[in-house]
Length: 353
Image 1 (cartoon, rainbow, N blue to C red):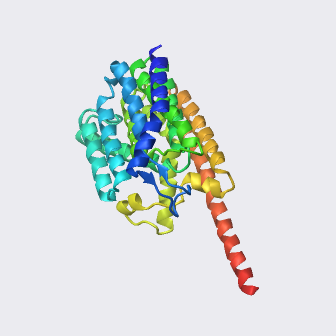
Image 2: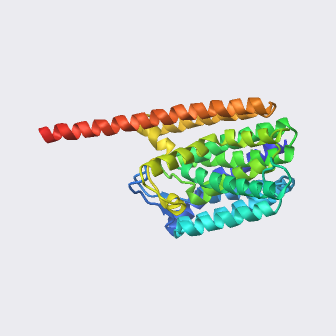
Image 3: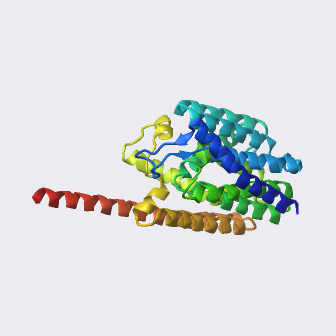
């Protein structure tokens, strides 16, 4: 009943509260303006992330016991929310954003939240600190980059939180499971406002970074398996899509010499993410979102099954996911080359005429 209550409270709160935040964003001029690197054609109000935060906060106030394991993570996520809101309103430099992300992640780790898979030596502690830092900052930005089509980031978050919820309840981690249910309800409550044609609303950087940091934080707090190595595999599988998007996009941008350092990586924006390539291959925008939903569900099922498996089976599952993403990446690259060849052929024909 607590799980259902937390989910329902967050869902209703966001459903009813989102229009209020939308009106505030419109009144204050906090809008996502169309540009060459975006797919929408009309200004759209932001602050959807603030609506999700309000719904989550209301549910946590009703069930404060769910905050025990997560208060440090949620405090860090709240900082990401505030930083993202400032970026939505005024725009922040890439150096400032990465600096804040690194600082907040370091504080969360120093508070006792980090991955544990190496010997308890000085080099093991340093390595775990760095790996956890890369995980928190990487997933936060990866989820931010995933927010490129209507319903993509918020819908993916629902599936991610539900996958974590299923594993947590299967291992009797009910308190953390309740927190996942609350976040899933809040994200689901936002989806209708993100999908609608009129009076649409976006998450904004505030919402996507808030959800990304929360997911990354839950991944290092929860106990996903008895084996330390398998514990690492499960969060990677659950958030495989944003991780793949970040890695694939980064490789393509470096190959095409679009970026040269991490600041340019953070600053660069373009329609060259996983979901954009799916649209270029012929899928509709809604079709690309559904495709990614299906892929996310598949990875979530794999993560659930791996939670009771050995290291060897976990490695095989990760290898299987890597092969799937490798095939998808290969198809994207081949499709892109064919389109470029087609454009060059059309230009030659036009020149001959």
